[in-house]
Amino acid sequence: MERKEIYKQAFERWGTEPQYLQAIEEMAELTQLLVRMQRENRKVTYLELSKEIADVNILMEQLTQMHDIEKLVAEQEENQLKKLVGYLEQSKGD
Ligand SMILES: [Mg+2]
Image (cartoon, rainbow, N blue to C red; front, side):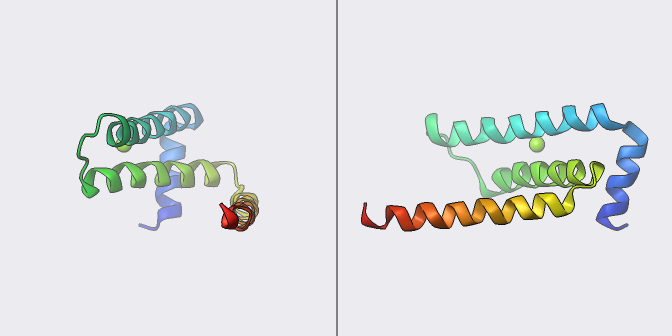
C-alpha cells in the first residue's frame, strides 16, 4: 500500500484529534531521546534514534497530507534552508 493511501486510511479510521495527539507523543519521544543523548550522557543506539526520527517524519507527513499543505510545507522548507545558508555564510568569520 502506498504511503498516501496508508495516511488517508489512518485519518479516516481515527480522525484528526488522535493524529495530533500521536504527533505530540512522537515528538516528545524524540525529544526525550535527544535529551538523554546530550544531558545524561547515555548511549543511544542508531536503531533507537532512527526509529524515533521515523515516527516523527511519518506523523509530520500525515499532518501535512491531512491539511493538504504539501506545497506550502515544501516552500517553507526551501525558505528555512535559505535562512540556514545565510547563517552559515554569516558565521564564516567566527
Ligand atoms: Mg516514537
